[in-house]
Amino acid sequence: MATITELKSALKETLEARGVLGQLKARIRAEVFSALDDQNTPRPPLSHENLLINELIREYLEFNKYRHTASVLTAESGQPEVPLDRQFMANELNVAEDSSAKAVPLMYGLLHHFLSSKEEHKGKLFLKGSATVHSQEPHGHLNAES
Image (cartoon, rainbow, N blue to C red; front, side, top):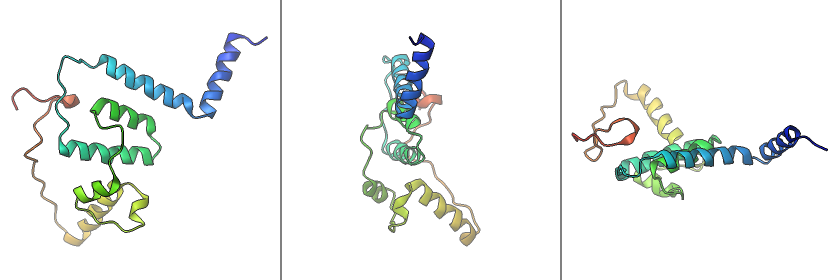
């Protein structure tokens, strides 16, 4: 007869082999974040910019098989569970893609664009702050003075 330790070991190996153990751990982490999150403190609304940024990050995470991290991002940020349409994202970012670019996350194409244009323009891109994004404290909570 198998011991409890042997049964635990066999169960862990089976869940790992099926790829379920990591999913369970990520789900537990997401539920812990949800339980610890102070529900009395209102979460700032998900701005259009944050929606797009979170989606770029989620696409990158899922492409690189960081699914557990992606599930925590979705749970913690309030990002919709269903990913945004790739063509919608490209249109919102004013990006045109060829078929080979569609094989990788949009973030790779954006990074490639900026890295290659660095050599062409020899200058730096001047970034301006967005009028719709307010100063935030760590963890995404709006600063009371904003």
